Length: 115
Image (tube, rainbow, N blue to C red):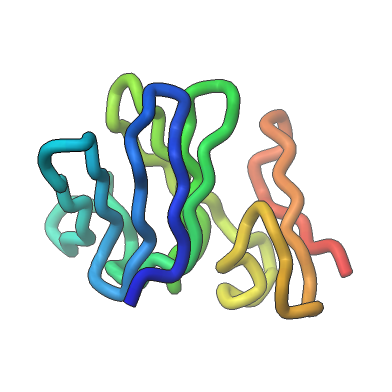
């Protein structure tokens, strides 16, 4: 199931699915998946949300928490939830379930929960 679709500044289309994150370039689809042997990848294949920002980063909400991918390098960073339940941050940039939002400040690594 596709949960969310986003387009980055270069035109790639990103799909958040139950089976990983997918990038479509107009010709081919590339899969980004979790691998327990490689912690630098996504922490979970259950990708709930995806959003691109104006700094060339892709924000990825997974079942295991929030990730940020630098589109130029493909490097994936994982963000600790700092006492917040994992499920509270599955939609990092929008809130449709009237639960809570997560707020990220680049200078303060832990995520903070907003009601």
